[in-house]
Length: 498
Image: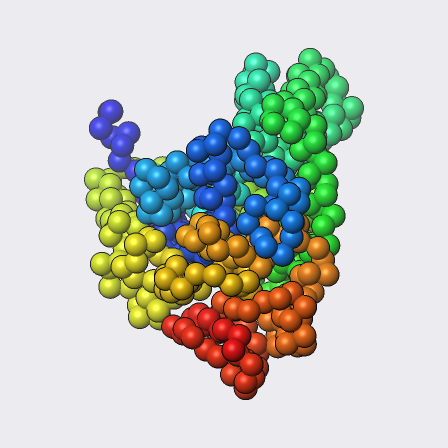
């Protein structure tokens, strides 16, 4: 009987196949430069100095003492320690492991609510497809598990499956999360929405739920709000999050903070899931409860305004979608006998073999399609699976030819901060650090608009640009006798003022 427990049923095999497919894709996502390297640099500074920086440090275009909040300081330390232990390969593997655990926990919640592993597999597949554009290594990845764990805890508590003492885990998770990433506020939002939904259920039918359970829930939410103070900035962390949400450069200029459009797998799946949920609510057999309604409404509002938030909506929506689909099917289909077969175990192991082979230590040896291989660097000391837009070779040239007031592409600034710290940058992905007007100047220069006047005003004498992302600027420089091309590779160019 013990051996049989390890043999998956056919229903569970569907879920295993879906998870293997999603993790195979997550494992080979190219790592762009923007949101990794500067975080690594901060993590290293914290480990080496024992202090959290509070100023600009890296950009020559602003005073070195310009204030900046490194709110994800502990997440940056964790990134650096992993990188110090195993390089980019270990970072990529850690990301994939976190994705796998988060998807598995969501799948288990979907199975609990639907009663069907197959329906849970469908919901998990849709969740994965919605998040395909949000699986890179960055400090946000430390938020995935706290979000899923708190959501799972609260929903099971609302269904009466968890005793009140388990809610003590929520403030502890929030205290840790508030030092890892600014998305900790979503944990408080989850708690507040679930508490409101359960309060409404209690007001309608007080006899069905003891008030003591509702009181324990509100106490856990209040304790979690206080637990945020367990960070170096105390209550100032709330102010940082509000300032970030109100930052004009962040909200207006960064693509992932813009509303999703029906282009690409992730956004198309998001719109399909929203449409499917609306149809299920309109014609389905199961009414939407107040807690589910509040959660869906809030996180759909977030996702509708920001591609970055589709991930959170997916975690919330997948179990609800599974439950709504299950309500349409006869119970005999949901609870049919599912015998365990040794062949299922063999198949389950086989589908995980490709996932193992594309882990970062071996992926460069795999015969992946040429179109994919052309997107990443191969055999570099920096690490595997780095997006071609990481200026590995160009920075090596700058290391051998130092000096100058450099204008750089934004993502290149992140890699420069890590790989060539003695070279100060023009701009980098710390978006809220730089004034909105400076971002407008950066955009104009990148499009070759008034670039000559603007570069002269800033005193720039060298440029490190992306020949694809800044094509207009590259073409303009090629016709400008004041500038000469001193370096060029597959993606990057370095220009010098004559």
